Structures are given as C-alpha cells and as structure tokens.
Length: 226
Image (spheres, rainbow, N blue to C red):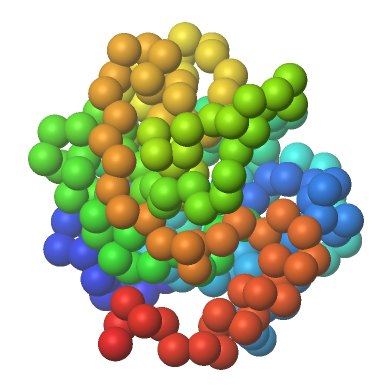
C-alpha cells in the first residue's frame, strides 16, 4: 500500500473493505473477478488506501476458488468474515487500531467509488457527524406491492463508503444489532446520519450486467473530472 494519499486527513482514517460475500445473486464471487485488468477487490482496496492510514479487508471465512487474499502488511490487515454482513463488519472493526478517529466501511462490490466521495464522507465525519453516507436521488417511479405510489422526492439510494466517528460505530456494533448497512446500525443506536452527494457511477455489482456496465464506465471519461 502506498504511503501517498489523496486526503490530508488519511492519518486518522482506517477503512474496512467488506469482501466476504459468496456472490449468490451474481452467480460467482464477484469481488475476485477481473474488471479492466484488475480484480474488483483490488480496485476497491486501492481507492480506500489513498484515503486511509490502513485498510482491513474482510474475506470469506470459507475458501473460494480464486479468492487469493491481498498480502498483509502494517497498513493492510486481512480478517475472516462472519455469517452476515453486519458480523463481517464487526470482525473488521475489531482489527481497526483503537486510536483511530474515523472509520469508513466500503463494499468491495462498489469498485468505482471516487476520491471525491471518500473526501466528502470523511469531511462530514470530521465536521461532527456520527455517520455519513453518500446518496443519490431515486430516478424510478416507486410503488408498494400492495398498491399505491411512494413519493420518491423524499427517497434516496445510499452507497458506500460510509463514514463514522469511531466511538459511535464501535458502540453501535457492540449492541449486536443487524442491518443491511452500517449507518442504519448507528442510527438505531441514536446517532445522526448525514447525507453527502453520491455518484451514479458508483454502482454496486449485483448481476453480471453490472460488471459489463462497470467496464464501460471505466473506459468512458468521468464527467466529474472534466
């Protein structure tokens, strides 16, 4: 891991990259697939490393073909995941040094998270938020299965990396709550969640089509950098 970082606050930040899933919906362990000549997992670790003093990678507890773990070092720690995503994050959090001020949690399946998103999330936590998450407006019309339209004006889709004041994240996870993401765990424990601007390019690889789209996005110019 390079000692260079994009964020000037990287020295107080550690990132947990969650890569413990089996890829059941995708049909394969997607975090180990190739994306533009680099593994999905390694792309996610690389961006996290630019903004962190260290990265904890949460790998599958059971061996998976091709699931070669990154080489551990002083600034990269590999731990085994748990039975649920929340348990996997707790395993990763246990490996984060106790002096860390800000902890980010990022899904390896979002390999296109930008430097700008990392910087925004970190800045929100440093400014006093217990938790911060990137979010994008919902573009589709939403309906209840039972009938009726949901007002999408008040609805957003959340992404990762999500950022936390380390004491708030540790206290929330100590409660043993389960959730689909970590801002929900912190919010359930009384913490305030701040939303920052996400990016539609920061898609989550859920189906094989998403991998095709991600490859096309890598090949296309990033409008944010223009």
